Image (cartoon, rainbow, N blue to C red; front, side, top):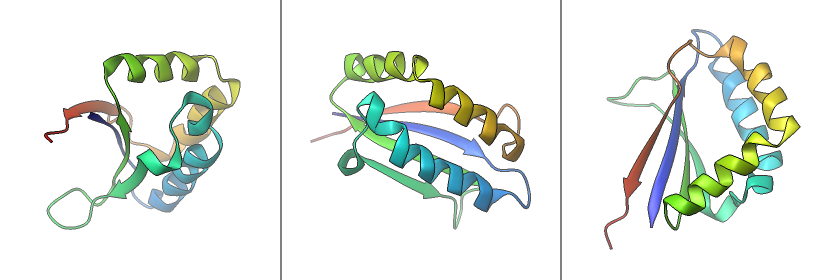
Amino acid sequence: MMVARWSIDAKFGYKQNAVDLMQRWAREIAPQAGFTADRMRLITGSIGALEATIQSEVLVKDLAELNQAWDKLGAIAAHKQWGKDLEPFVVSGTNRWEIYRVIE
């Protein structure tokens, strides 16, 4: 198993706007790519982490499953529009993916 973590930093004063859009994405768009609620969570910085950081974590079987989901996302028009809606609330250049292996 692997954890795929997508991270962004919200602009000062716009964290709640970004969180609201991330929650909308998790409800409406993520399932279309195969990211189900039981394998996803949203987290945000609190202590010892940047408070502006918002992360979406999804549990995937392997990189092939993740790549398949990314391919699906690329074809979803609502995902493209969501990215445009999110952009004004995010610090440019802070978005990134990190992939972790789960030790069992």
